[in-house]
Image 1: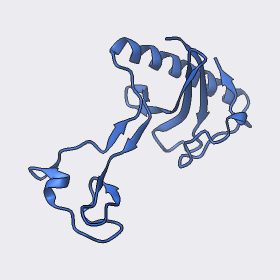
Image 2: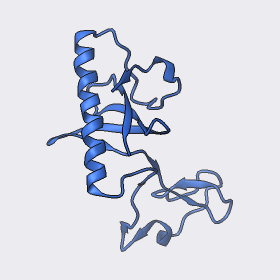
Image 3: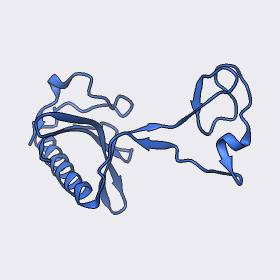
Image 4: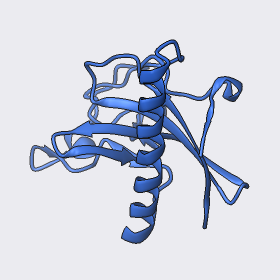
Length: 150
């Protein structure tokens, strides 16, 4: 597998730990979107695309976040066993959509994405008029305005 392209969209809000959204092209044939660059006390790291986990209401069948106490659609109360175990959440709130299977692949992706992120940050420092994305959008709706970083 070769990472043939990484596109970076910096986040405008400097007060958030989320610093950028990225898309990565593999072998010029497959794209992974919504990769995030997040700041931690130990430096930046890459978070793979994920979605919030949900539970279905047994009464109406609608989907609700797993920590919900009541259905957002019909108001039915969820049994404690659907949400928790021993009074604590027994499920993670997010599930990865795409992720590397081994540490070597994770390291390869992390190094490449962080290098593209650092290049984008330095490029933006030189030309501050470059466009950034708001924290709440996070999606690459229009790839035409995203400059390539290789």
